[in-house]
Length: 579
Image (cartoon, rainbow, N blue to C red; front, side, top):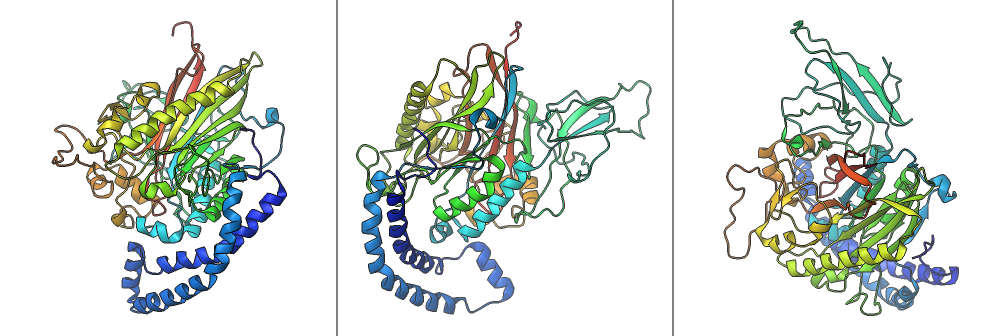
């Protein structure tokens, strides 16, 4: 689909749509407040107890009456607005496209591929940015405030310098990749954080990945062991793991942790990090459940200056021509895509088989083709990025399997129709909230879907079995605001400790009528991992290979969502003659 900045074909239709929505909005807002005033989050209840505030029943009583009266008064105007708004949805394109700076595509491409290799960073997060009243049923409130804070946090994380520390140590075991670190143990040593505004001294010749990287060489002197038989010092690269509070303020940075190679995260060659900030090198970000339009605009305003290319308000509304959607849609798909690379093509597909509460939203698949740059043969280098949000209710795996099948068919259809003979594909990524995990007996059907034969899941050891270092991404909603998980640092420490994780990560869902036995003997406790980033190798030319450089669990949004964002960094290079 050709990309347009406006979702409407002309200004007249856009103007009528704005008028219709302006007439609906007051009634919608009063209904939202009517429900929200009656539904408190656990954090609000705790705060009232601490303040010894006993006026809340009066606030609920009088607030409900006032909002209900205003809701009734504005209903006739909203009905008129609806009669204008609903028919116009047939002329609306399924997303809005925002470009921060209008430049020729060749100038906008961030990478050139002339050396035949590059790394690409991806991240995904479910934000639960529903209207405030509905978000409260997930124990999350203040949608607009959360959207502003989340946008600031993500922008802070992805725009910071990529700090690399080289440490001389007799116990160093080699040279790790510039953005990788291994799984942390509780007794790992710590190092002081580097202030990104200061200019550290650099000793020796250290390779620098890009001009935005900050590289520091730190000699390590072991005062206890000066044995002449000790091996000579080597350079080890680790990421600094900086901390920000959940309001996005740049207060103090937490000390970065050095993660050791003997830990489980390295057993299968997947470097792992639990980070209190979004990775500094994210190239494409996929967000789910950005249903609220105002929240989407706040995210667009925050992330536009950092990532540059935004697809938001993705999906359809009202009635659509079959077989696009099966019922009236009150909400869009909730998908939101932000990319450093120019978007060449994009296409949205709506799931036609949703039902129940999920049928109110236009959940589906968003496929995008982005321009990376050029290779040494002056061919265009492109990548495919696909994001989705599957059916949510538990026990309805058949629907999710049908949707997974649709996803594979639609991706193939999109790539076939937009593939050009003069282009080279360097990544094909699928991510999103799949709403099933790889450890619940109730999700057995989805775990065996053939999509996992086409796409590689870095965390998966096989159907129903996770790799030992994997961490669940769905949090228990009632305990989201407890001290162990309320800040990025605290959540980071909790995720690194299995006993604490059990208290705050959702456990597997048992099959109907069958007692749950989890975990099995000699296996770690993982919990529900429903947020995925998958990649496919066979979309690339045969002389290219893909390697995982880093997998990241991100705790920066602690207290702001009930999901743990995840990141993946891939290294793509030409195969050598030995491969």
